[in-house]
Length: 164
Image (cartoon, rainbow, N blue to C red; front, side, top):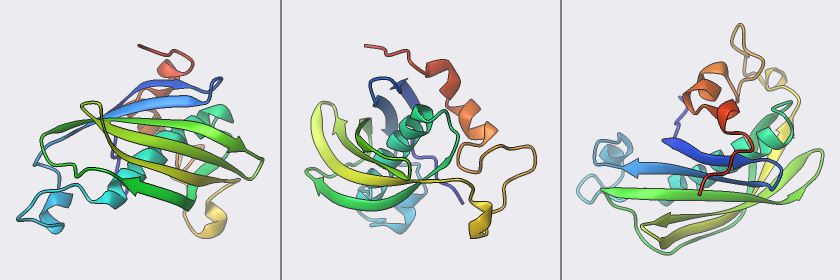
């Protein structure tokens, strides 16, 4: 199962190496059922994943979605506040270092302008995931950046169009 943890992208600017996405947290999310059901708090691992997903799309855009992008390593992560429903999160990611095999991003999450979390993450670039046993769906050019994924977030409409 693939968790799409972002609601939408505000902008993706591959040229400047910055992106911002958002996510509204409600009590309806299924992960609250398994993680402190009596005390609904967003698991910190999902905050890291939100930064990775935002940065992953940014990195994909910066290389024209020519490779699969996967989370390789969490260099560091810091958590400053718990996220409880209802919350509206802004997730920002930016590229700090890039090579042919991987890109290091940093990111932060705010809730109503309060810093919630920040992290530095290494994202790996892979030619194809089929060689690792993950079959590519028929008609798709990418496992990570599937047509459904790209269309659901309107990725191609947003490229290079920062919004204030």
